[in-house]
Image 1 (tube, rainbow, N blue to C red):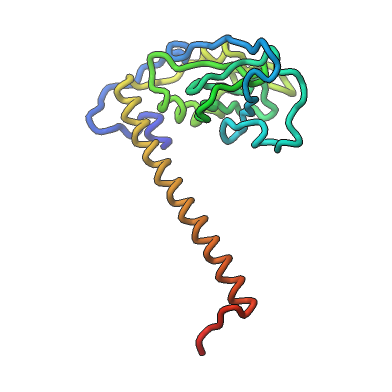
Image 2 (cartoon, rainbow, N blue to C red):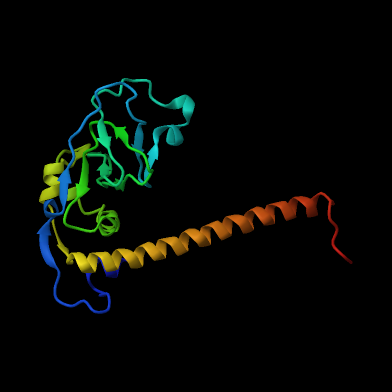
Length: 204
């Protein structure tokens, strides 16, 4: 993945140097807030992915505070926590299939003129690179303005699409392997339980 997202390995048929561009060329901030309490389900943007807050904390631990003025996150749009304690900024896309909302400290944006799937991988790969563009000491802040001014070498749209297709397929293969591993682990657990309780016996 690293070599694909840095241009060190190229997809067959693509040549020429990637162009250094500001991220703002591909991203547009989305500025819409809730006007009613509990207008939309509340999201949590974790270091792993975007989740329903109820799934992340559990139903009995979700916040009871008002959600009026929260940022709205439509399907397919990205968000990130603009404050970081460790200098890592994780960008998550709303792949939950429903519109939701999130704290005002989480900017929301959409991809324009680029591949959504490519930038999903690209921003995740670059998540350690934004520390030097943030401000603050004990807690670092990366505003959308500073974020959109960051420059990286980025491939043209056609190559973005090709790279995203390869990485998406790799992710799907990993998902299937993990499901297979979980099924085998469950099978092993059941077998151990029956063997170690004498419910099934080993032939002499």
